[in-house]
Image (cartoon, rainbow, N blue to C red; front, side, top):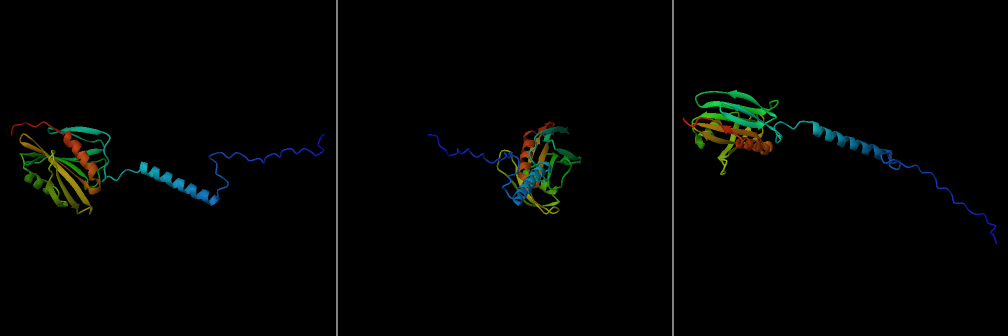
Length: 212
């Protein structure tokens, strides 16, 4: 026996358009979306600024490449983004005074200098010589470290920049001449500067005569 009741057809589901992934969700309030957009823009600008703004020159980074120069019997390797800013030749003690700095030159609280001296110097004379070339600073401590490289470290206070400075020097004696490598930087940037100085010491080549 057939039923006289009408058959119920399934009701069609209401149309709900598919929202693309990149489209804003209409369920999120407009204010919340605007805040999210502002935060995303702020983060993007921060990343762009960090990538494009140069690092403060007083806090160097370890260089990716090195260049080499030979002056008066000394062959030096130094960072590719540094330059030789001055060469001073005097007698009778200092044969050559090479001074390196960033390109373009930075402030005087970040320096790397190489001295070639006539004669063999003991540690006391070396320390006195270094102190004489730190007249713009107030040395706080100079001492020799007990390590194979015979490093001598010091701390100073820049009377111009009003900042704490840390540095070191190391000596190489060849024949009757002494090569002093001196470097210093603001204390916060000394770790990288020390690595640069160490690399230069390891790759320093001298070709002086062995006779006085």
